[in-house]
Image (cartoon, rainbow, N blue to C red; front, side):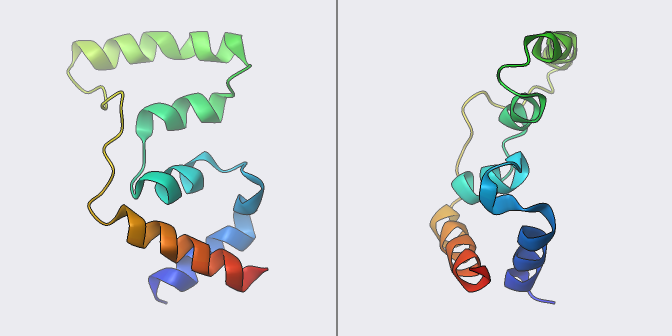
Length: 93
């Protein structure tokens, strides 16, 4: 199974076209997974109690030097990844 078939299968299974899959959206936008935003998107931006639960995890990661960059770096070929996603989404419509 090639990469485009894997994306298409995940797209169908997870319903990624309705913007409910933060990992899908992160890879599509940046060409890689933005772990910082993934945690916040998964919790929900309006779910304040859940976001506050993430604060101790973020502080512990910061102390250990394991906090991902706050501003994500795009992969060198992020345009190719975005084009691949758009082609796969066009095939599934």
